[in-house]
Image 1 (cartoon, rainbow, N blue to C red):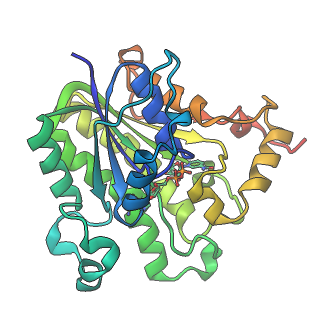
Image 2 (image 1 turned 30 degrees about the horizontal axis):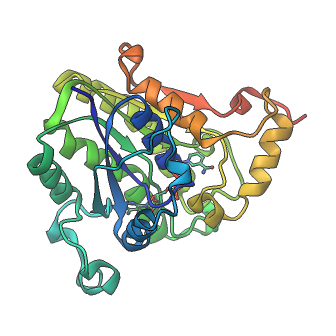
Image 3 (image 1 turned 180 degrees about the vertical axis):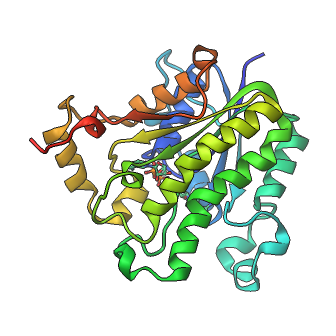
Length: 286
Ligand code: NAD
């Protein structure tokens, strides 16, 4: 049978999550998606109204099918963790079972197991502030949404992941080199995510024969990236300075992700793979 993938962090057709979903669908996988609760309505409505039909187009001429969309807020592990003001917030009240544990229980009830877990989400409420001006709450929120969310998803999904399966996340070079503007503890969150990739590769490898890798992606004008504010500058910088002077397309990251979660990469685990036109290798702006 074909493989089943759960992709956390898809809410429109612009980001890396969507591109990864497409690459996996093109390779024959069944696609389940986890969409941030506040973005759920607009995503489902747009999908239904055909707004994404053009970008659903796969190389064989068919349209990507998303088998099911699960509301998800990866900042909460189980209902006990959800504060009252969030519970009663009208953007949340319409949906149910969206904590990590509940989503995994739902997937288990619906399909029994998955083969591939993709984490393509991040959030840092103070991303626009330099680290020196970041509050404790802002820093911890960035880590919670962007790093622990991955630990939690993998921890909860692992028992229903088929041995030989694989997981992947998205990181950014600000974890290892200073990128002014990527603030609010987001650089710290990506450093944690990359370190966790190594430790989780060991633990999930031993425990469930699951591989764990992360893609350090170059700049893309996604919704999340536009919210940070300097993405156009980063895209220009990359174009000017990377070994490959071309636009970085989301589907190039999607294809690399499809490779990494496929049997072609059966001995690759615990690694950070750069999909950035080679920009990370440069030591001097040109
Ligand atoms: P995106 O906006 O397509 O994806 C981010 C998603 O995270 C959104 O769908 C958002 O709704 C979701 N999200 C935020 N908080 C959430 C929560 N608490 N629970 C569940 N979902 C939540 O943007 P993107 O740039 O494609 O981001 C995907 C990943 O790629 C992120 O990890 C990001 O850091 C990484 N990345 C992006 C770039 C870039 O330039 N765009 C570069 C390197 C890495």
